[in-house]
Length: 85
Image (cartoon, rainbow, N blue to C red; front, side, top):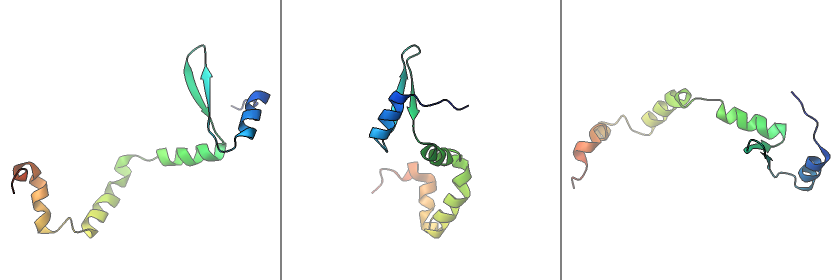
């Protein structure tokens, strides 16, 4: 659904490029954000993934960083080692 931009909002958006405009519905007290569609699409892309989508990359990165070294095994049982010198 597309709604035409009223002159008041066009003036604000034009006068302050790059600034996100917050809109308040005084009846419901809900806030909305007006931003360019390009910015919305960029943000939508960031929020579109689930954390679980990154698990494989996290494990691969940890292995390259040495987390598979036997000396790191004590982190698997961190609580029993905590407080020891």
